[in-house]
Amino acid sequence: RTIVFGAAAFCVKKSIKVVQQGDCSIVERFGKFHKELDPGLHFLIPFVDQIRATVTIREQVLDIPPQKCITSDNAPLAADAVVYWRIENGVRAIYAVENLKLAIQNLVLTQLRAEIGKLTLDDTFSAREKVNQVLLDELDVATEPWGVKITRVEVRDIIPNQEILRAMEMQMAAERTKRASIIKSEGERERSINEAEGSARSRIIDAEASAKSMILEADAEASKIETEAKGVARALDVIAAAISSSDTTTRDADAAKFQLMREYIATQRDLATSNNAKVIVTSSS
Image (cartoon, rainbow, N blue to C red; front, side, top):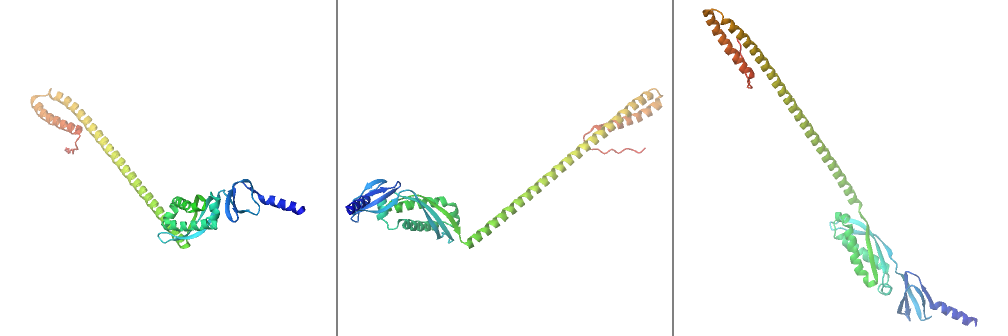
């Protein structure tokens, strides 16, 4: 009786299968696929039904180790990636490929080498998003027969070899030196322009001040001559009045001198009030 109860308990235990949330189990009957078990409680026929495998249907992460690649301009580098994927069909994931993770990894490495080989070294740094999208599209199509959905691919690191890194550092140093030289020369040019403009403005201001000073001096001199001429004219008027009261002979001689002096004074006044440049020559007597 103990043996019977033990055998019954063993059969009951073998017939009950609990599938955890996020997993699915593949059941084989007599070595042939029978059904796929979703999360929950299931009953199997002991010794007839067997659990072939239990796989997770949650999203998984696969790290791709660094892979040596050659760019289109023959630059060697190492690139690695990370792949996010999940199983959508457990049956195909078990029966369509022997080692699913290894198959995905090898496929990613192959596609990564191919895509890097289409780009130049400079493009590998600037076109990373494009490479990610191309890898995602191609891998999703390639893994679909395995019941796998590729959700995201990220190229993580792209590292050129040491010789290329040294050459890149030298190039960047040369570019920094060139930019510094350009900035310095532009600064010196701006300074020279500012100094020249300042000097030109200074000369213009000095010339304008000198011209105004000469005009003021000329106006003052003309005003002085005009004032003197008016004074002399008033004196001549007084003399003329005195001449008119003298005798005829003396009056005629004095009248002639008076007329000459009057014309001289008029000429001096005209010259003083003229805007043109003039040179006045006077008699010493």
